[in-house]
Image 1: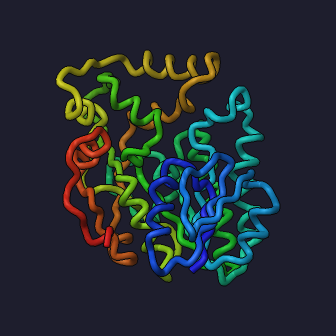
Image 2: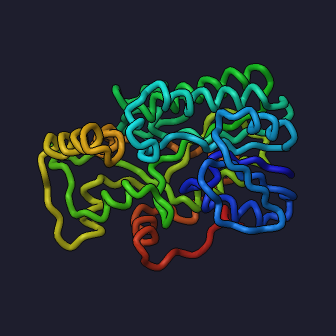
Length: 316
């Protein structure tokens, strides 16, 4: 199988590319990104460029499968253009549509979406739940639009699977997420604290590998088995924690983003204060996915340098 990966130099790409290169069923990996990929391997071909370039579509026509991960996540690398909504959408949505339009219907597409498309829910959501992102959460809004573009292509016969991972942690996790958990602060919210889930980057990469060689289509949720509030995560990681008013945290995030040009979209921090729980039965049933890191404490411990649990079936 010849596989094209967009966004290959990103956080998840750094985990996925070595897995693909080590799989005997994969004959060539074409890694596309604007940033350099610091891997050398006889099966690897690196393409530097923008997801909106016509060269990506031309390359996509000659592969067996595409893993589409190119997406503006934290908007930090855009510099002063980070607030340029038209630019961000041209990358997130325009790039996705251009790629899809170039695909042969026989090409397998694994599209990386996000649990953020659901918005919020304290009850486990299955994939039939409506996509209702938090108002103003531009990243999640673009994920919904990108999924809708893939869904339209599915109706036209494209074999596509849309993965919706929860908050991804691990050694290569987004710096904002690692930084937020390294600081012993959390928003003081009325009890009960809203439940959240996370998922380990290795388990997301394992799901992608399973998806490439599966005939399953449609959306699939990915998350760990248990739930924990952001406050409880902080208490697990730190001996002493400090509560702050949510308004203070949100105001600081907005000021940093809009005036200092640092940090993620303020809606990222707002999302950490809202419940969101997924039902991942479909991943287990259709893909045979069994997370190596099923518990949040395991994921937190591994992300911040503690011992990892034993390997599970999804890593074989």
